[in-house]
Length: 412
Image (cartoon, rainbow, N blue to C red; front, side, top):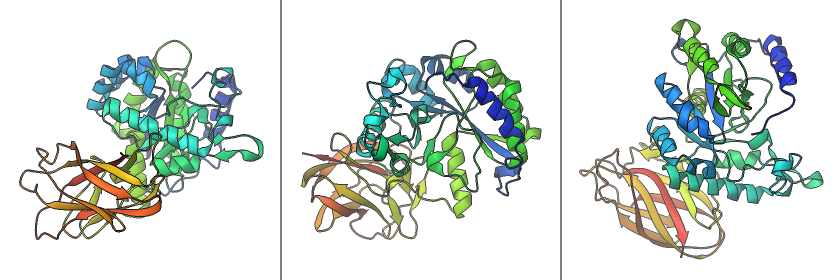
């Protein structure tokens, strides 16, 4: 993100929002353990101060934030970002090139006005791939660079919110005017309110507002320190965290993804398979990623496990389906990521699309908690839209097939 001249106007807007009669209405939504509200701390761009200073600071308080990453910036402090992943901080996608409107001179080389929805999809898929290669994480969240949600110009302008909704569980904005209504909010257009450059006394009215209304406040920042442009002050965070961790204040302080999963579960009455990923398309380099989080589980036992980003409890009567749009007919190498105990290993599986299929055997991974990548075979795919199914080759009376995380198809 970049500094905005209208910071004074934003502060005025925040003040107005905090006393608005509409925003003061009480939500009927029930937060966990009798909490009054939820607050998420989020940070953009993979700034160096986040990895070196900010995340160790959050770890001291056992607080988890959400970090929206640009892969090239991650490379500058790769070891520190790996430590952040190991500490349980949530990693999310912030694109490859951080495209914004060309009205910002620094964005003129790569302006959103020159993008199409297809180009944006390819870039976001590529960012996810790069972040997985760097950190071993599957990003389920996205933050719109500069808060811009469009591509193109004039009569050809389109929103890329539908692209984000299809690829991610959440999409967060920037410099928004109010918090999120949990019973109503669109997960692809969550509001993000600025916390850069503010002392706690400027943030506290917003917190008081959501304590009364029951809404979900997502705070957004950049650098983490005390001085400089676009810096979330650690002194402010210290007071905010201490206030939030006081049980008397009824605040659930959790990452964006964790809160979003709770909200979706509460609204549906059961833990949903994430509603993104309705149509899988090849990435920028032609590879096709069939993630658990974009698949549809069918059967009596199979369940999506968000903490592992995988399907588990996979019995002989369960299967996973994806709707897939294949660009090119051809032979595809099949790579799989799974886990299984030694006792349950050895069962056969099928990956099929229409009359085309491949079979394989689930090899041991070491334990249910240890995921493994391996090439497992090849499959012929036709061009166009089709359904792909992963299932057991035969029914089995007891045990489980595997915990399934992903199949990747790479054209030969």
